[in-house]
Structure formats: structure tokens, C-alpha cells
Length: 171
Image (tube, rainbow, N blue to C red):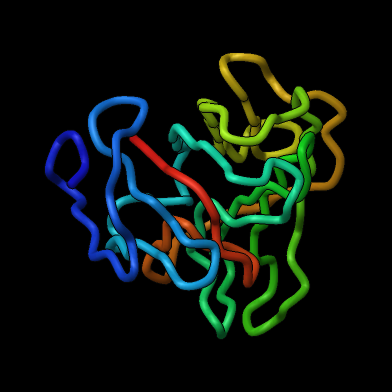
């Protein structure tokens, strides 16, 4: 459950182990996911999403968080680690289109099996519509553009852009 017990998720193929704070979800990189109600985040309003993660392989392309469905709808969004020094944020700009607006944020280089705090701030008034922080350090070299309106599908933790996360995710 979340720390406030307001948006508990349903896990599939997730086990639990000692995390950064208490227990963390152990994601297997191939089928582990936690589904959360779309009511947890309204992407039409400014939002902040924070999580601790510990990736088995820092350099691989792995999803953290997704609200993008198989039939994309404007405003659905996701973020993932595309390599050891880039976090990518996606947002659907056109209904039914797989063409996504994307923001790439360069971050300090990640290491395998190390805990990191990831914070994504989404706000339509920002130049790139989002900001990314790792351990309190803001990403640099933003490129692209993210536009969000409404979150229209259930949220998935441990999955984004057809990529599963392999490692631990904690609150």
C-alpha cells in the first residue's frame, strides 16, 4: 500500500524484500507490475511523483511508471530509464497515435545495484512541461517537449514503453 493508504495497487509477479525504507517491490524485468487506479494522478494539474529505485542493470532501458494504454489517449504519460544517464518522460499528444511527445533529461550516471531517489515534476507552465531529479540533483540538457492534459488509463509501476523494470522500487 502507499504511505497514506489512499491508492493501494494490485501487484502481479512482484515479490518483496528489504528496501530503502521498509519493504520494496522486487520486479523481475519481464512480467512484474503494480496496477494503480487512474485516480492517483491527475496529469491535467501539476503533479510530483517520487520513488526510490535500485536497478539490477543501470544501463538498460527499463520502465518505472506508465499511464499509457494500448490505445493511446491524449494526456497519458510514462517515464523510464533509457540508459545509465537519461530519464525519458513521454506524453500522448494525439488520440490513438503511438507518436509521443518526449522529454529527455540527462542525469548523473547511474550504477548497478545502488539506491536512487527519482522525482518527476509535471507542470504545464514549465518550459519542457516536466522536471526530473535524481537524489535531489536536477537533470540537465533537457530536450523535447512534454504536453499533458488528463490521465486516462490505470497506472502501472514497473513498466513503461513496453519495458519492464528489473530491480527494486520503494516508496
